[in-house]
Length: 301
Image 1 (tube, one colour):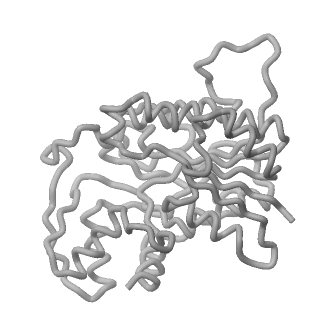
Image 2 (cartoon, rainbow, N blue to C red; image 1 turned 30 degrees about the vertical axis):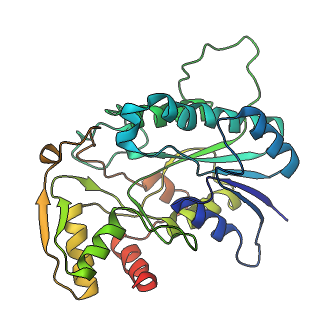
Image 3 (spheres, rainbow, N blue to C red; image 1 turned 45 degrees about the horizontal axis):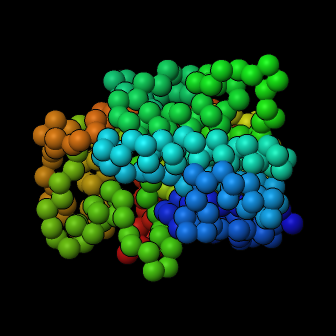
């Protein structure tokens, strides 16, 4: 039986990953560890956990994802999103296992006019985006590394880096619902006014679809590397809210706002839709965001 270690397993994505790998005829032996069980910023603890659990695959869902908080606490973001990734990859290499790591659209500046591809040059505008880009560099052996190349480079684990964005999905039992889509659904259901960005374009990612794609990437032997793993299509948050209202059969009382008027501490990429064509070229076709939203609402009404 395949052994899978999921870090950050109490979060939105970690919950979906643990559920996905635990089901079906080929269910894996899943060790789902949250931060209390494994702090990935502690290299010794990471090494011990990997040696004891002997996973065939590590799926890293642990992240410092407080975008505005990272501007005030850059060291914390760097420790989790950068150095923690390095600790996992090193431990994986020592134990000859593979790694899936998740990154973000925030590695881009948002100045594009068409969906970003994996070949587009990253240019993060926030410290959160910078910390996630550092995690990519430290995880991916073929990417530029901020560290000097040693004469005898250390062994590296095979790594898939999957960029996701605007996650929505089911939470673990007892966990607090969170995320932009959840907030939109709750406000529309309650008949409240819905403040939404009219000038920020995204490719939403349903955690169930990301988890399914992650499992296929591993089981189908997709070549390690960088892939955008988002639902197909793109929309502004205002358009997404309108679609939620239509699917729920309730009028959406939208309050369109702009990134400039929001006056957020950390800059957000204005246009951050991502193309998943590279993933599709490997036979993994992601459903549209509308289809994903419909399935999410069916489960969460």
